[in-house]
Amino acid sequence: MEHWYASGALVDAVMALTAVELLALWAFHKRTGRGLAPGDYLLNGFAGLGLMVALRGALMPQWGLVALGLLAAGAAHYADLLLRLRSKG
Image 1: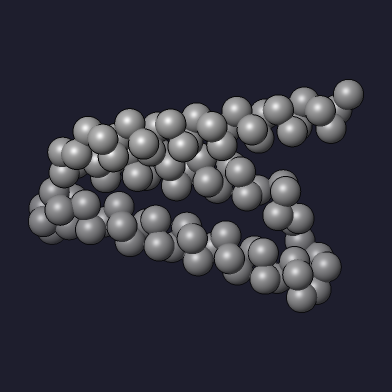
Image 2 (image 1 turned 180 degrees about the vertical axis):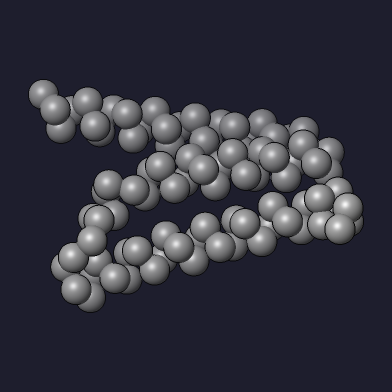
């Protein structure tokens, strides 16, 4: 079991499941017109994926991957907040 943590395989599996979830939400909305619109969750999902990339980099350790993941997560989070702020005003 420790191998799953140390190798980053567990994080890879969670990232894959998250990507499948985002695609399923998008496909459901596209086909039915119901559910959340992609603009309501996509940037938040990308921020989460970025944090998981950073976690994987920290487990390996690949510090460039940590920096890239944190940068991507921060950019997605900032963009999400900016869009929400603009939609309120």
